[in-house]
Length: 106
Image 1: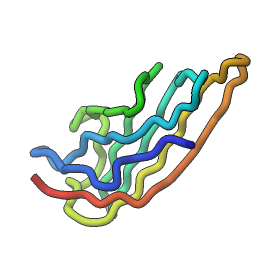
Image 2 (image 1 turned 120 degrees about the vertical axis):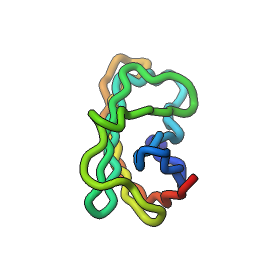
Image 3 (image 1 turned 135 degrees about the vertical axis):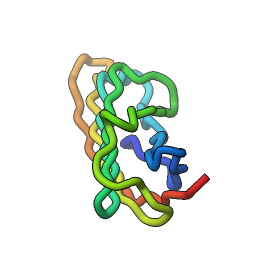
Image 4 (image 1 turned 90 degrees about the vertical axis):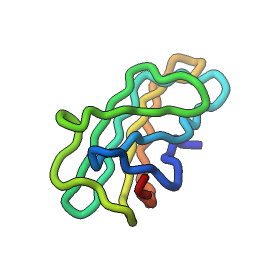
């Protein structure tokens, strides 16, 4: 099953996010890289994890370097992810997904 985002994410005091979700690795797979983008109207957040491990992932994007545009507001947003992984046979696999996300205030 491809990785994903938690169905709701909390907006921090800077109007940015701490994106997280399930990694979705199958037995024998190793994650090499996870890139994410979250968009809402004129707000965007990006992140990159190298070699994420475990069943879930969490990113803490820098509010000045990785957040663009307006602060996020409570409501609907779109999350996109790109996961590069390797299976037990050494083959590289690329998975892409996009999901609706609900953003909630503190």
